[in-house]
Length: 381
Ligand code: PLP
Image 1 (cartoon, rainbow, N blue to C red):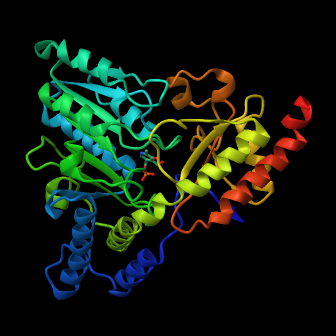
Image 2: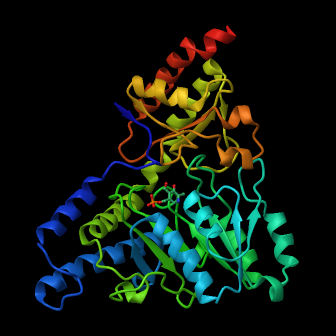
Image 3: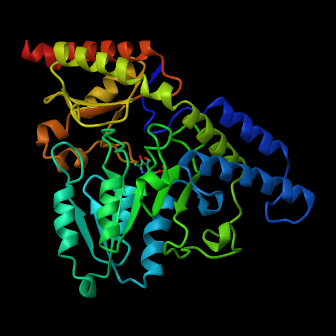
């Protein structure tokens, strides 16, 4: 089997598995308990917090562990709106993950869209104009929600530039860094955002663990209450083993950044072949994008048909637009970039990572071309 769906979930890294097993072997102890067993569990969490802090260039104490990227975004969006007493307007980029877009829609404050250019990057001129004309009395604090790297296309966003514009307008920036961490350099000072949402399972940690980093002093209120864990910002007994795995995965992913960057070579060779022999359109080819992600479309060859044909050939990829039910819709990300329906319903994503071998890219191309030759290429021959 060739696994090329790292942006959905990356395989567990050995470092993460070892850290999780060691944490599980500590035995049953609540990290809030004051006895030695509890203190040992607490130590596991604090070690991981330090590892995540080192991975993003932040203080450990500004990191709150959550149950994943979705919860981190929910805490950031609802928690900021609550801390601002609802005197806020969210500006959400048109290509955000549903975890951000839907949380924003339910936050109880007005939501505006930050448009993206055909390049797939947010339109900074539009954002600047919008912020320049901001009526603070009517709209409250502008809160931008902008991802660092898009999950479907891998296209990188100019977060530092956007966050600087927002800061100058007295606003706040929430950055969904779920697909960026471990794949491109992430540094809180350089990004300039006020909140960063992170997730373990995209970097070789376990599913169901994530974190929210927040700038010291940034407005943030808890959205769930209870035992007051995580400095009162996220009550609930922590997932000790999961957090241990997240910390170890983050350390390994940042260590392996140069290795990840090298995926661009075989990725480009794969895309060149798919274009030449399969007539595909590579999405975001001219834009800065993650090295291990390839989103390509072949109008007339439906995304779900491609995914199924590749699955039969033992190759795991995604339709960029798949939702949790597994159904494939037209890609809203591609539509937001101005792509037409034919492109948006025929785009698939192959994503690679820490355990991918250069040969995997060739195998994906081979399997895709074979499937295309039986169907769409035959028809057009
Ligand atoms: N944000 C992005 C960009 C993602 O790709 C995902 C996962 O698909 C999420 C947020 C949600 O993260 P999690 O699955 O940890 O809740």
